[in-house]
Amino acid sequence: MSVLGPYLSALGEFTQPIMLFHVAWATLLGIFIGSLPGLTATMGVALLTTLTYSMDRDAAILVLICMYVGAIYGGSRSAILLNIPGTPASAATALDGYPLAKAGRAQYAMALATAGSALGTLVGIVLLVMVAPPLAEAALNFGSFEFFWLAVFGIVISGQLTGGVSPLKGYIAGILGLMVAMVGSEGIHAHVRFSFGYDQLNGGIALISAMVGAFGFAEVLTAISQRRPDLVTHSDKADRMLPRLVDLWRYKFTVLRSGVIGTFVGIIPGVGEDIGAWASYATAKRFSKERDQFGSGSTEGLTAAETGNSAVIPGALIPALTLAVPGSAPAA
Picture 1 (cartoon, rainbow, N blue to C red):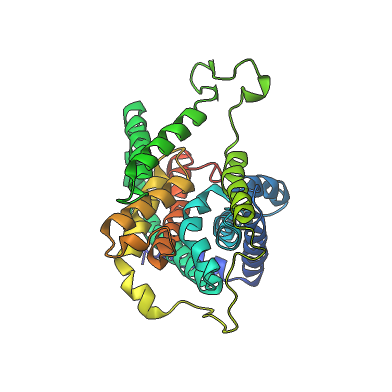
Picture 2: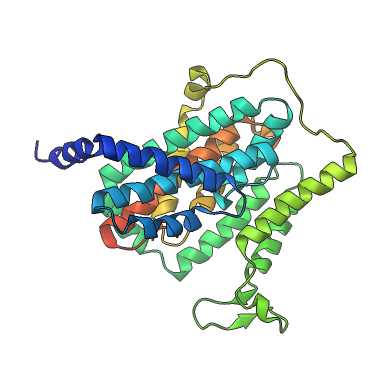
């Protein structure tokens, strides 16, 4: 009973009406902020922090976590419907979510995103309860060498995501992205790189601006080039509001694997939800029997991406709650 005592006490506190009210409005507000391209989870948590000063400690923490979870999940909405990720964590979701929407299955794609987000958060919470202290200590052992190989891993992922058609294009895109990320002041000695005398580039290129430009502007050019007023297939038949249990059961290993990957990525300080989504997506593609469908409307790829980015949230809270070292910017 001594082991379960704190959890039962927290559960009793959580089920109070005022706490459930805080969960409802903070989560809905987070979904709204996350669904708007350019408004990130970090911005939402930062803005909401000022409103929690008058709350008690438990309610304030709960409100901020709900905002965090809602914003990461809300980013999938614009990623699926507009091919413009609401948050960086939803960039991988757009690869398969938007093709599903174009095929007239937007409702089912959002249902899969909802299920994947819920299951990913659940897997992360279980790991948070079970192995928080040892995982946090392992994450703090990440030094410059480990982060270097993590960057190399990201470039390798970019090549693998293109499949067997042309991995070279993915590697070139990854290297170009690395070069763009090097613009601005570096974090250790504050040396300014590749600013070419423009003070506006001293702070680097903002991720949100680059992401909205890459996805949104590309979508505008696609619409203009095809000269079609409507790029989405309309269906008179209503799609499913909830994913089928048989689909979720078929992807059970993908969900578990993506949840574990996302949680471990989350406990590494400074990595974030976008890396968790891409790592989970690439791993799911590697082990999938339907890897050819990834990038063209794969339900497994969509589930893996949403599970991975949501599992990062409990993972990022592990070092924040145990060692006061946040695993991501919103967790700070």
